[in-house]
Length: 73
Image: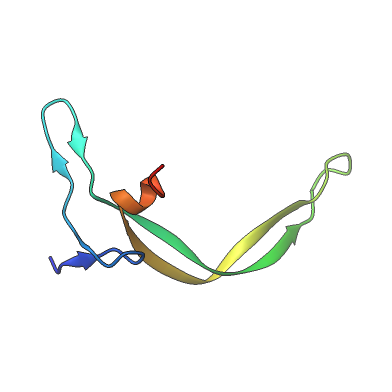
């Protein structure tokens, strides 16, 4: 498998290590991108229509565990 790098800080990330009672996770995959609003009409008159954002141009990014934690306090 090719080396993956964090999209935020650029450090190389490592595969998840599975141990007997826990896992060590070094990165997460996020899917983001361009969206457009979509409304679906309700089939029942007494229920409101449903609105959501449809992902039209997906972009996959890798985020290391350190960046997911956020800035140090």
